[in-house]
Amino acid sequence: QIVEQANIHGVNKNIEPTLIIAMIEHESAFQKNVTSRQHAVGLMQIIARYHQNTIRKEVNNRSVINNNLQDINTNISIGTTILQQNINYHNNNITYALQRYNGNYKTKRYANAILQHKRNLDQLVNQQDI
Image (cartoon, rainbow, N blue to C red; front, top):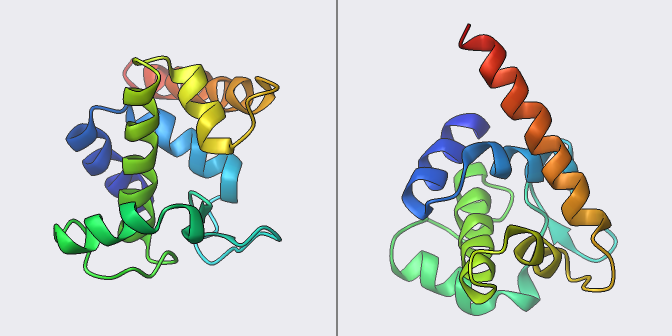
């Protein structure tokens, strides 16, 4: 279900699904019920207090049926919307968009880790195409 939702939301928001899956792997290790010490919730580790407008819009637009961030569809929908906003804000610069998602502009460590996960996933996908 995670891969299916990453594909759906990736296509809808023009984000490579492997980037979404790489973020989920890094953020939550695919654990939908995880909550961090900073109160980041779910697969994409969304901190609700920073994204109330985005959550409200997703619910009002019926992109999601509820605001339960532990729900796979809700979390991936809202997480990819936040990522897409960041991509737009940074003129399609994925590294900066990822740094903004993480909330850390001082280092590219987070962005580099996500992009490495993505490269690894892309290699796996390409090997499966053989």
